[in-house]
Image (cartoon, rainbow, N blue to C red; front, side, top):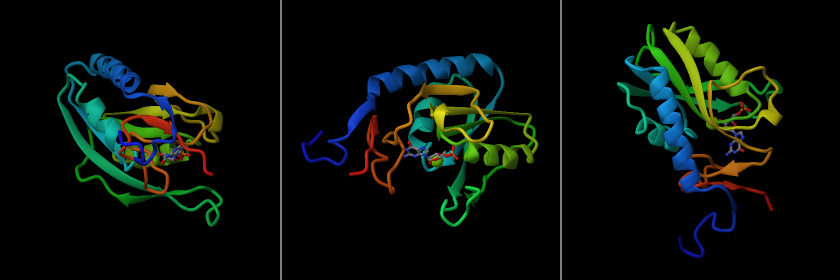
Length: 179
Ligand code: 5GP
Ligand code: MG
């Protein structure tokens, strides 16, 4: 990568090889768990986009995909940290085996909200996979069924994750420390 490329000064937490290896493992585990059953992946925009593309290609299943857009209200104006839908599903999930794909599980507010919304659509089953988990930050009692990596309480970017919409395209996960 070029010397002056965006993010080059950021410390790498998870390199591409480590990410590839773990996502392949997750793919094998999920493929074994759903063997013989079609699976609908629901990616949470925008952060899950890169991880979802990598994971989907590791699944030896009949896979279909959809996306749900969510945004958090600003904490300053919404003390509950409430979440809202910015893009609904394109296709019904009623009666389907659904796996929600997230970039990172932090306080748990987003997960809790999404699971409430999706379970109201009566899927056959509803499970979750997150690339990253920060359990030390949890305020809601939720956990993912599949976790790529448990990470410390640092702000990470890359592999889909942003800081003010930047760095999503980085091929690895890096630590962002505001100056
Ligand atoms: P939660 O509702 O669990 O607190 O928030 C999860 C969402 O917060 C993630 O989907 C992500 O958008 C954002 N988030 C939490 N921690 C980080 C982080 O370390 N880096 C980035 N880029 N986003 C984060
Ligand atoms: Mg997100």
